[in-house]
Image 1 (cartoon, rainbow, N blue to C red):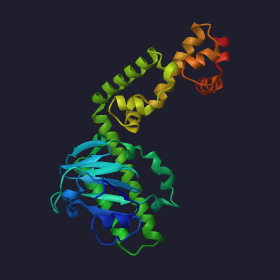
Image 2 (image 1 turned 60 degrees about the vertical axis):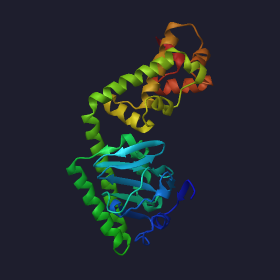
Image 3 (image 1 turned 45 degrees about the vertical axis):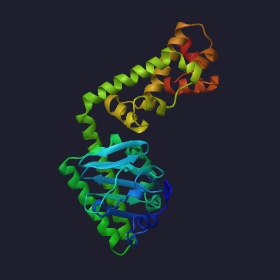
Length: 301
């Protein structure tokens, strides 16, 4: 069997799992107790064009992207389209409990959720950044999932479709609240991450890597901390009020001010030293943050 399987639809997903034809072409909920993973499927990467929300109530070894992770009881994981999932062990029916909610992006067409879906940054989190739920939180989401399943197993019409989307959006909004609770309970741990990030960022500036490499992509800083870019940015925003990008921009602006007021370097030279390939990009960036051009800032001060 190929070491990579691409799944483009809910129907294909059911066929791969040897399930009956889905009740709805764009959404399905699978009980983990119905899943069976045979030895030939262990290690096979499955890449889908579907969103997936999964709640595992028992240990479930799997690899998400390039990260192996043993999911603990009550772990909620979100995956976006084109992310790889790989089973790391065999699984028999009725061996584990939980559910997996898959939906195709086309489900959201004509609904405002289609535009809002990218705001749910946890779809790009790593496996070790999954959400750990209390019993009450699990009960809340299980109730919503039951309502979604009830609606799509009925005759599909405009009303039932709207109820599916409404309950799906509720599920996502509850998840935001639960993540906020998790961020609060881990505040001390997260404060140490903030300090580590700021030390890495300051070292990047002190070593003049801006001049050599320009402004490093956010993913490079996140990788050094073994975090996903979205999780790092959300963590920083919760702890400091600023995202990863804001932190980087603030430090660049701070360094620019020092050079403008403490050296005789031209704006062009300062722009290059801060990693800008073109001086006018630096001028535009500086003005957007400070409200005046670098030249004006230097003159006023």
